Image 1 (cartoon, helix red, strand yellow):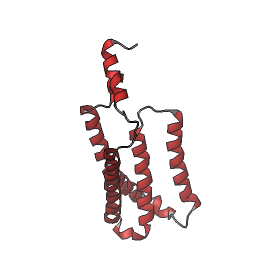
Image 2 (tube, helix red, strand yellow):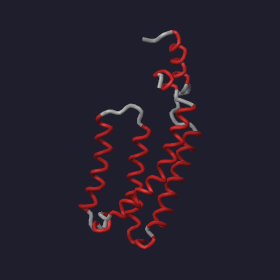
Image 3 (cartoon, helix red, strand yellow):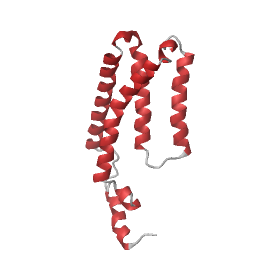
Image 4 (cartoon, rainbow, N blue to C red):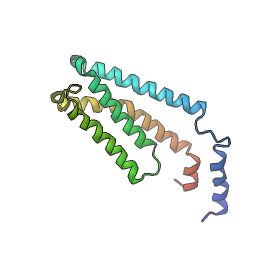
Length: 152
């Protein structure tokens, strides 16, 4: 039940997007900067960590990209539903299943090594963890309007 205190806060939710725009210039350029950072980190670390396996750079960088995007989607979700979980798991299953079906594009012997998994994990961590940490700090210092209403 809404009290007089939360009633004033709730109006802030409706003021947050007065013109009905869901994508502002600030949001666009923020996501552009994030994409450039992540793409640059993925390619730079792929080349540095896998310099001796240059022929496998596509599998390395694309695997890091897919995992990175699944993590970014998961970080943006505020209310989880079963279909969201299934879609993330389904995407991962389809991608890793495609490695089995498309052996001409993926060297399975290379992809199944611990070194591949560790290095891809490092790439994904360096491209995702700083953004997650920045978002956590930002949400703590400047919570969104819905978080104020929910008391989060």
